[in-house]
Length: 403
Image (cartoon, rainbow, N blue to C red; front, side, top):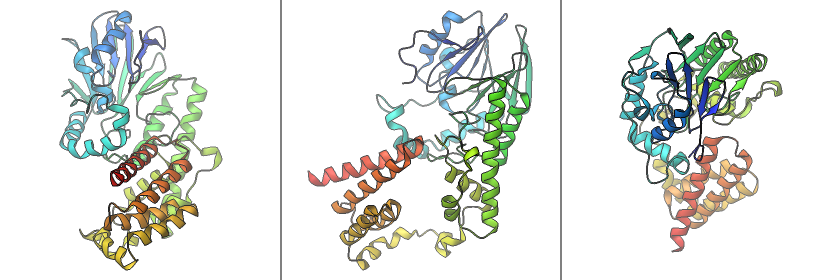
């Protein structure tokens, strides 16, 4: 688990300390007690409390939660004190309820993607129920021990309840995962695991809101702080320009009559606007923008998309007409050998729907997935984890045939 083996919190400034975790916790000390921005991952409460202890200067007056993801607030119960005030963004309780209501659905999907990273001795425990004392709808300004703080509700972010925390005298801003888990990177507007969509214009306004502060120090939910007003301003400008470019090009393509798949293939960022693609990807942002503006029904999908009978309902018939799953596997192999793994996977979906244990089809599928993984470079975490999970599944099914 992230941060295991640490013996102390890492100093960011003389009065701000970072406890590294799957999502970091930040202790801010003042003359009138302490303040936490986020608490770290569930099950790590006692650990994070112990790491903060050498730097504590008084009672824990406030805990501010930047978003309703359990890696940011899960360690709260062990750290909250009797008089600690919990502050979050408007919609925090509603967002937690959303995750609770969809827990089986999201759990299955997250389990496939992230099991190897977040599970050690079985599934993670259920997130704690946290009821904030204050849910901020606009701006909450307060002073604590001579230090000024502003909790600002943001229009965009990883959850619809996101806030950032601004310390105007120090020109320091805690953004949580407002810009995703990696700085200067493509936003993840629609996640692979599932979540409520994040709207592109709201995300762009959030970038502008932080840029307008002209911060000298940005402290994010993960990783090291970003220092220097010039660098921060330049990075935010590039992030805003990159996503604005994708929105313009996607809208232009929609108006020109292109399909979402056309645009996912064709739209690329100019070299001077390229940013990291560690969680979000250019093609995924294009699709998110297309569907935010055009909805779920793509005319190119035809009439059947309006009804509840999927194309897979006729896969067995297609396989039979094609000469069986083995014949489709051979045609798919030719696509793989020609460097066309996606075309191969389309055929293999038909083949394996008809004969789930067809060894040749499974072997070609595994090769196609490995080819995709190699082409991806392993830079995007969601893509990488999905492909690895699918490769492992294909290998497991092949092994079962051989037993």
